[in-house]
Length: 442
Image (cartoon, rainbow, N blue to C red; front, side, top):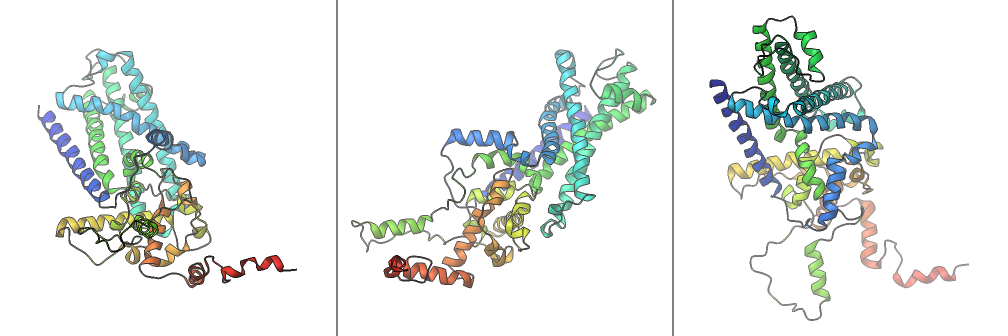
């Protein structure tokens, strides 16, 4: 009875705190400007199914894709076991579905155990890649400190979780063989794929009392790790486990390279070209002037901000960026990480000090430098490589728009080109009247 009460309190507190953090992140994302991404629902569902559920873009690099698939499938399938753990925890029962499901129960737990072994192998491989092989894309400047700690912490938590699963099932198997399991007082084997071997070999020499303690340590350890993992997600890059699905659904379906029009500029041009428009008409009284481009996170769209929360920090964007490869300061991964960090700071400031609070900082300048923004070649390689359809280029373009249209700041190499466009209607320094002169050349 006491255990059921403790379990229920942990259940309510764990899922309650997780829910509060989810609502906080949702409100942070909605600080961004509105953008309509409700068109083409069929194509959006297809994109989400292929990219988020099917991991399509991950397989551009097969080895990490297979390792990631092992952890991903194990994570999804093992959640089925949580249904039984939660039911047992609340009711004070043990393996409540075993008798009613029979062979199907044995099959389900066996699949979970096989996938847990696959996840264990993948986790060790990922730890090796990060800490022993030290792949270059995991050693970039933006990965120093918390990002590396975060990645390793989650992998260690997965190791502990898998260990708890096999301690729980292995000790229970040894108890069942002795006829002392809480699931049944009959002697026999559960027949699970892995623990039917692990149980007698690793736990067979322990006394019944010790096995009961080990089984409970595994069971409660499993439950504690699930709650710890769940509540750590909102603070970690691993939040992409949840956001990958809406982020791919709302991804940009236009062809890469097609730039967006600024609504304020478009409306102004339409007004100028409309012969029936009244040039002296008063503007809408409560209209808020829109900033050209983006200086801070609230100038970006909610999709840009969702992209930032969805970033997996895998570094595929940075490793394929021609600017970064050639030694430039730009890293598309850093653009997304900076945007997320600034958004958290900006939103927390508003929550603590009121909606009118300004901290005097901005995304451009305090987090992302002009040098990074202008190093981008706008080739879309980062967009193409991202396994969850994040678009760092959209943020870079809006930061550039702000610099050009609000601050009149741009590299000197571009100044002449823009002046020529303004004066000559072309990027060259020749008058429009001289464009046909080449016809008369010998």
